[in-house]
Image (tube, rainbow, N blue to C red):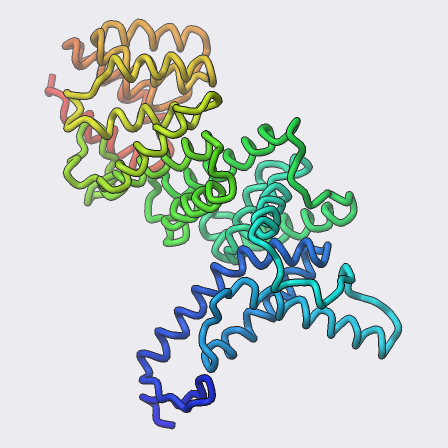
Length: 434
């Protein structure tokens, strides 16, 4: 076999691959294995009743698949192939242990092999996947553990990638996963879809974790890694997957629309110099129109339901921005109305602050100064750099340059990320010299 061609027995016929084609096919097989493993793991957890066993047998099945599929081709249903291979290997290992030592070290739930696996229905696969994500976001775990488990167990991200993306040592990530698995086993945490009484609360926890994953990848950070840049894509993929399982849930539609709208303008979120670029200054011709159109459809579906919430309203606000050809033509009155609704659903300081910005666009900078002063007097967002950056802009628009400079300096002291500091310094440099 030469260094440029490889002979592979493919479905009883010897086929010669070029090195390039061979590498491409291996890459394709790895991608299919990764995607199929997300569905396969969920079912294996149900069949085995043990998360560690499900993961280890699945990993073995993936290694077998990478060799077998290169020779025989990728099967029509990769996830069922992985499930069958993992299950049958586990049963073989169980019989081997029983025959040699009489001790069962593998916690496999014995089932009739004749009625398993290939007869798994779509509804069973769907329920298995839902059970898995509800398990990862179980209230027995804190948010940090839920985040890591969802990335590793549901998203199938390796520990080193999670550690890089979240800027947390690999050892810490591994310990969180190990402790969570021990808790599942010792506390007998059920692998199930919660009852209707708790379903919405548990679903909101899942959406919160997906949103955290998105924010971790989307936020502007200086010299961030590829893993960080890819996190927001993983979050969108997770949300699409969840919507496929629960297509009627309005807040899943709303969250997906919100993330797509942010993603639509992601290519211009930072300038060549890595400075922050305000929404007002975006070149909107570079926004991804296909994502905006998809988001509008999702928002319309969500708003037509009777139980939309915070994510849907945030997406609706982002959509108003996306519909405007530029900042000046934005329908700020409509945005204020949407923030009024959002305040009823989620009355938190950051929402109130954003509503003040919209009101200032309608009624002028005096209104903005008065209302932001009220927030500060109430002890809200006093350490939030954008509060002072906004007030500095209001002062500048009113011709109070000295106050604008002093307030920008306050914002600069509070800004923690380098791009944020660079942007504030840039705004200060634009002020008239006095």
